[in-house]
Length: 110
Image (tube, rainbow, N blue to C red; front, side, top):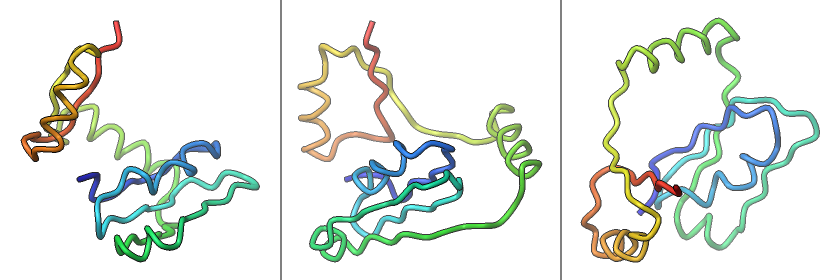
């Protein structure tokens, strides 16, 4: 399992390092942010085996980003997620392994 796509808009390099690790087979990383002196590296065997794609996108501007965030803030983007306590993590992993998770899990670490 994993994400169909990760869209990296960060201005710092850390998000780029992890983007590929969140993908499912045939998933894509879309690079939008332009942090200075940042590189993305990919483990070749896993990337080929899983048919991962890395896509650069230089479309839009700051105003487009603001409008997209307004759409999300207005609730016009619907996501499926469940909040689980950290102590339920073993059960979450089991449900994930069994293919019984719908949407995403947010861990409550408090």
